[in-house]
Amino acid sequence: MTEKKGNIPRIQDVAKMANVSTATVSRVLSFPDRVSEATREVVLQAIEKTGYTINHSARNLRKGGTGAILVLLPNLANSFFSRVLKGIEAVASGHGFNILIADSQFPPIDETTFGNLFNTNRIDGAIILDGNIPKSYFKRATRQKPELVFACEWISDCAVATFHIDNLAGAMMATDHLVALGHRKIGHVTGPTNNILAQHRLEGFNQSLTKHNLPCPRNWKIAGDFTIESGVKAARHWLELPADNRPTALFCASDEMAFGLISELHQNGIKVPDDLSIIGFDDVEFAAHSIPALTTIHQPRRRIGEAAARALIHKIRDGDAPMPPQPVFDLELVLRASTAPLHHG
Image (cartoon, rainbow, N blue to C red; front, side, top):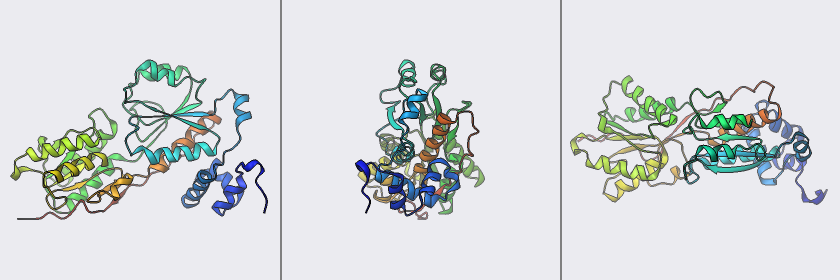
């Protein structure tokens, strides 16, 4: 058996663990669209387990690069981002880049701090997961010429590549599911009003109700901000509605809000789904383990992170070359125990 020199992982080690050829590993790293999703996932997991990285140190020195990528996200405590970050890290490390992570909302980032984060002496590029950053902030950042892409969230009319699901279609899928279960009084726990994801999910909810000719009084649309705490407040709002004029089902614009909602309702003797059906959005890890397990819309967060990282690295290394086609991210309705047919009587 051949010993690894200095115990540094090699491409051969990745290939052996993934049970593929070294050429396949190279294609996954350089031309991922030419490899099946199943093979790509096996190779990326092998890269992560072995700790393999391409040695780009000399290239970075020649080009004056830092070998670092900034990931800017709006709430490090939100479990949604964990698999997105895993996807980014797997691709970035495989290409020899280190990841720097910054929180844009806790505390809220100001324009000077934002500009300083984009200092090209520190990073080669950035993946931004916050669509609420003022457009004016980017003026200073783009003057410093880092490469940028958006993932999950984005800013309208900002000419930067973005990788995300069809949030409007996902919201329609969630609401259509509640209608199919016989619910006709359906409410919505929204995300922040200035957030583009929340706007698209609200629009999808509205379009589904219009399609089915269903009403939604204003007080059935409950303001939230994607956090567990706002889900708790949404439960209190629902409890304060007249018992004969409450929604029998709620679509939550995030799983986190659904968790807070279910917990607070349980504290007040309300049974989900017997008394109220609840569907979330995102399919974070805890959704399968909450009580009851949460019906939700699954989005492939790791694949989104991988695609964003590949695109950014392409821009860093081959900025003048055409971008590869953006992948289509499929949505999936994950049926669990928090939704049920409407009980009459």
